[in-house]
Amino acid sequence: MFRSTDSHDTAARPDGRDIGGSKDRLTRRGFFRWFGDLMLAGAAPTGYAFAIEPGFRLRIQRHAIIPPNWTKGLKLKVVCLADPHLGEPYMPLSRWEKIIRIANDLKPDLVLLLGDYTASHRFVTRHVPVEDIARASTRLEAPLGVYTINGNHDWWSDEEAQRRGFGPIASQEAFENNGIRALVNEAERLEKDGVPFWLSGTDSLVAIKTGRPGVYNGRDDLTATLSGITDDAPVIHMAHEPDLFMNIPKRVSLTVSGHTHGGQVRLFGYSPMVPSSYGNRFAWGHIIEDGRHLVVSGGLGCSIMPVRFGMPPEITLLELG
Ligand SMILES: [Fe+2]
Image 1 (cartoon, rainbow, N blue to C red):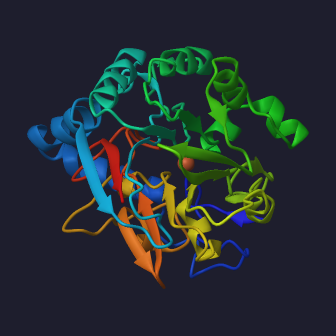
Image 2: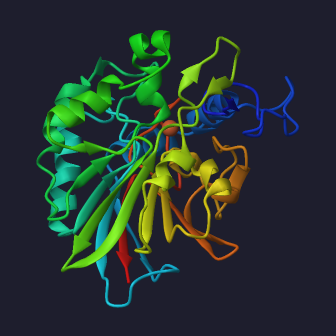
């Protein structure tokens, strides 16, 4: 069981224990309301934080890494697209199509879609069907393939899957119906120029609503995922929520995640509100702990409030080896 700070009030650890959460504590929703009020104090910053940064800015965030347990000579260019949260007016399908064109211009070997495809905040004027998102995503070009994982919002937006408690969820089926492989607690062996590596993906830690505020059941199974890896080739692992990094063994060369949006508001390298049990620890960027490597994408869209400040939408480009 997992408690999330994504849209509820309680901060807690994956083992269910609170980490100082209380009803008096500033919540993410409360923080964004406060930040919105602050922005409303001046027209220019308001327009920037509510319209320009989330809706128009886009950066290529590059990370050049030689991960541990990496095969000498294996060079991989990987584009990661996380948390687009499609929904008008901030992320219409046309913006997703533009992002895809920019991603293709980077000439990646591999494209990883890291989950959370739809927006659910109250400022959405028109929802974009997951079938349309998946169909548009077929325009992504990468010789080693395009892969997706499930995010928590992908689970939450599928009411039928919430009721039955297991997948496959609608977005996963939409991608697979369009020829984009979903890695749901499984691994696949790939090769570049005859040099093998593994790509694995786990399901969301925050998948099923329990009816208790902020408490969710995960559908992740890291043990089953890694049991599918049958040789010593390097492993890239996709996990929507970076909190899973706590359980990732050294056998994995690199973990890639989204979910946090870098906190959406980030000032001087600090994000006041991060949907993680570990605060700023896994909020954004390239993190190395105990010889293990994690890259957290700042993502492309917004949740709770359509606001970004100091954390523009990003295409995350990994140059490995
Ligand atoms: Fe998420």
